[in-house]
Image (cartoon, rainbow over all chains, first blue to last red; front, side, top):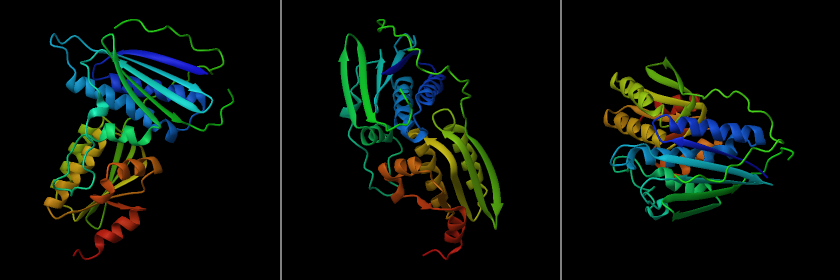
Length: 143
Length: 138
């Protein structure tokens, strides 16, 4: 098993740093860009959500930890943050059948994650939101 | 936040390469009064606002059509989908043809899952998009 982790303060630069982190890990682990995609997406959607909706009343930055591990052909990402307790899996999916004019402009990020991942699990404990996402990623790398 | 278990990367991982974060680059061409926007890189939280502004400006110039060539678009998040939706609406409101083309499989998957394939014209190539925009509209 190989793994890595990163801690970031959730500022407007955090999504970019998290994208670089997962790209770096997958590149070293021999995971192709298309297989990396939903993990990249998860880090952006969760960090942006925290940035736009999770501000602390005293405006101190939130913190996010991402832990990624690859075991055989299963890639797992855990995202922990100290934002307000929020279970993203309780959000109703967007109506993906409505017409252009009436179509909602947001709410697709978590819907995409739920659709693209094999496993998605949310827990809240000791003041931390924890989202665990996993997907099978057939890869050629020799571990 | 409480300290998580400190883990040291195992020695089996290769050294970290120097990764340059890829931004979104765009190039705009024009053919028969249709603007073709070739996008390259990542359409994400960081790049979506400026891309939306660019598309709004292009559409407000009232071309006959607008085609987004996504052949080199590697990544799109919900922030990026929003840009396509807003641009498609603005184009429709002004009677301007709007299409995206040459989507990478993973970007196509994002369009399909979000149902954007039902509301935005998706073509396989730029030429197919131009042909479609040239056809008489119902």
